[in-house]
Length: 145
Image 1 (tube, rainbow, N blue to C red):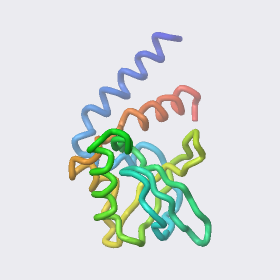
Image 2: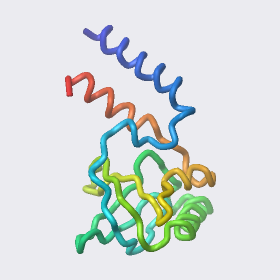
Image 3: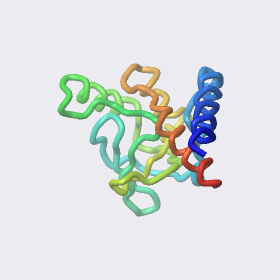
């Protein structure tokens, strides 16, 4: 059984390596909820922001990216400031998951429909973190979901 799990993981990683250059976002790896229009309340750091969606506050962590923490000077502040400059006040939220802190894990899109998550990666302010989605996908596959 362990060999089968290793083989499955090998093929998932190999397949991802082959298709990753053609992926614009991680959206294909985990399903998302229906898009929701939200208002940006503030920007805490480069990958976390509270949103007001239909009167409900949703603390949101950006899906598939990871920016430096605020204590990691000067990069944390630079990532946060860059996000503040590009996010605008209205976004579309596509929620993929909930993290261990209860935050919605989501991809955000600006008023023009561009992925804010991807914009942070393209600007060099955040690395894409495909492994998170791959491990979740592997877990779902292993459990027969």
